[in-house]
Amino acid sequence: METSTQVDQYRIRPMQMKDYEKVFQLWLNIQNFSIRSLDDSKEGVERFLARNPETSVVAIMDDKIVGSILCGHDGRRGCFYHVCVDKDYRRRGIGKAMVAVSMETLRKENINKVSLIAFTKNDVGNAFWNHIGWTKREDLNYYDFVLNTENIERFTQ
Ligand SMILES: CC(C)(COP(=O)(O)OP(=O)(O)OC[C@H]1O[C@@H](n2cnc3c(N)ncnc32)[C@H](O)[C@@H]1OP(=O)(O)O)[C@@H](O)C(=O)NCCC(=O)NCCS
Image (cartoon, rainbow, N blue to C red; front, side, top):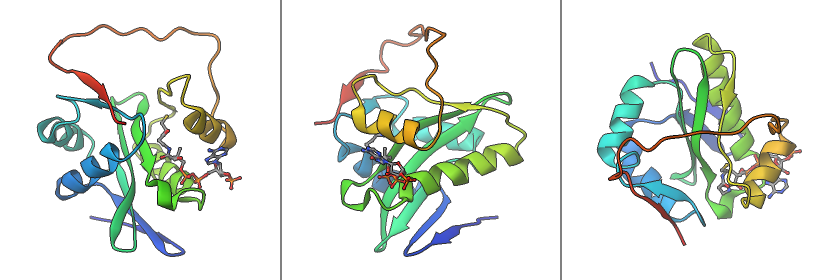
């Protein structure tokens, strides 16, 4: 069942595949966003949403998708990807409200912790996470290993 949260003039609801093209366009308009050729393709997002049907969200205002979060979990930890708000709609609480909705859905699915990666050079992103009370971990290193070299990363302008 689709539930949505209405705050002032914007509305937040779960992301569905029908939103993909608009959300992808939103990503392309965010400066310095990292987009992966496979993970962020229609097939990649479809797979992600099939595993996590309730936790990703879009924000709608003026009949447009102005914000989105890909959020999922593996049964233990939650993870956020591509948290973004259209630059014309920032600083009015949409980002924080989307984060709150995704976190509440994770809690309902018995997930006790959520994390994300922010590039160190992303001043806006880091300011946002610090401001809304997330903890920047100084006591660990992040490790990964590429399993498929065709999943090419590119950065938006
Ligand atoms: C980060 C982002 C999603 C924030 O969205 P937003 O809708 O503007 O954020 P909000 O209006 O909900 O702000 C929430 C709080 O963070 C603060 N905040 C937001 N952007 C900030 C900034 N650039 N500098 C300092 N504080 C900031 C707000 O003042 C607000 O504080 P309050 O709760 O005391 O009122 C948006 O700036 C964005 O899309 N940035 C580009 C993509 C990106 O960097 N995403 C994060 C990837 S890790």
